[in-house]
Image 1 (cartoon, rainbow, N blue to C red):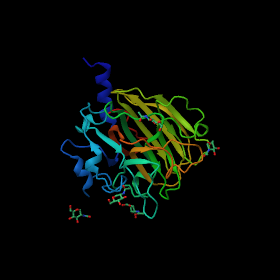
Image 2 (image 1 turned 90 degrees about the vertical axis):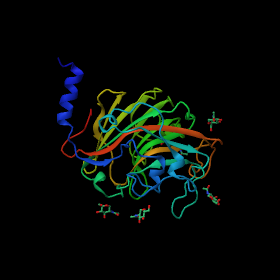
Image 3 (image 1 turned 30 degrees about the horizontal axis):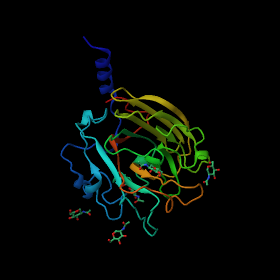
Image 4 (image 1 turned 180 degrees about the vertical axis):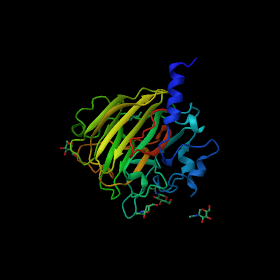
Length: 291
Ligand SMILES: *[C@@H]1O[C@H](CO)[C@@H](O)[C@H](O)[C@H]1NC(C)=O
Ligand SMILES: *[C@@H]1O[C@H](CO)[C@@H](O)[C@H](O)[C@H]1NC(C)=O
Ligand SMILES: *[C@@H]1O[C@H](CO)[C@@H](O)[C@H](O)[C@H]1NC(C)=O
Ligand SMILES: *[C@@H]1O[C@H](CO)[C@@H](O)[C@H](O)[C@H]1NC(C)=O
Ligand SMILES: *[C@@H]1O[C@H](CO)[C@@H](O)[C@H](O)[C@H]1NC(C)=O
C-alpha cells in the first residue's frame, strides 16, 4: 500500500548518501549565543556589525522546519539586520552604505574541501512577516565570494536591482534570483522565481570548481528539488566562501560607492529565515533532491 510519495521517499533514502562537507542545520538545543562561541559550525566572528554579537542577530522564529531540516530534526534560524549592522573589514573603512549579517561555514577558509571538485550548496529561505524587507533595495541573501574577495562566483538576489542596466532581465523586485560571476557586466541572471511569501523556497546549487559548470535545483515547501538551470557554463574560478544571511545595498544615484555612500532608512528591523543549510560532495554526480 505505498503511495507514490512514500515510494519516492523510500527510494531517496536509499540514494541519499552524498558525503556531507559542511553541516549547517541547527540542532534544537542551540541558542543564539552559541553562534558567538568558537564551537559554532559557522564562523563565530564574521560577518556582522562591529559592535554586534550573533546573540543579538540570530532568532529562532516559530515556523515549520524546511524540507531538509526534517531528517535532522533541525530548526530554522533567522538572520536579522538593524541600524548597527555596520561592518568594517580588516584594514578598511566601515561599510556605512551596506547593512550586513552573514553566516559563513567555520571550516570554509577559501581553499578547503567545499571548493574542490564539484560541490552542492543547499539552502531554504522564506520571509518573516514581522521583519519585512524593503524591496526598493537590492539584497544578497546568499553568495559565494572568491578567496581574494575580488568578486563572487555566484550571487543570489532579491529586491530592486541597484543598477537596472546591470540586471536587464529583472523586472519584478519581488523575485528570488540566481546570477553568475559578479564581474560579468551586465550580470548573467540564470533563474528568477516569484518570492511567494510565507512558504519555503528550497535551492541546491552545484558548482564544478574545475569544470566551470553550474546547475541549479529548486522546489517549494516539501516537494523534491527539480533541476531548473544547467548544467551550464559559469566562471567558477577563485574558491572562497559561502555567505548565507543578509547584505542590503543602499539606494542612491548610479555611480556612488555603494559600500560607503547612499541611503539607508533608520530604525531598521529586517530578517530572512533560513533552513536546511548544508554542503555536499557532488564529484560523482551525487545531489540530494529529497531527504
Ligand atoms: C574557544 O573558546 C574557549 C572559551 O570559550 C577557549 O578556552 C578556547 O581556547 C578557544 N579555542 C580556540 C581554538 O580558540
Ligand atoms: C562601535 O562602538 C564604538 C565605541 O562606542 C564606536 O566608536 C564605533 O563608532 C562603533 N562602530 C560602529 C560601526 O558602529
Ligand atoms: C584551509 O583548510 C585546509 C584544510 O583544513 C588546509 O589544508 C589549508 O591549508 C587551509 N588554507 C588556508 C588558506 O588557511
Ligand atoms: C524603502 O526604501 C526607500 C528607498 O531607500 C525609502 O525611501 C522608503 O522610505 C523605505 N520604506 C520603508 C517602509 O522604510
Ligand atoms: C550599470 O550596469 C551597466 C551594465 O552592466 C554597466 O555598463 C554600467 O557601468 C553600470 N553603471 C554603473 C554606474 O556602475
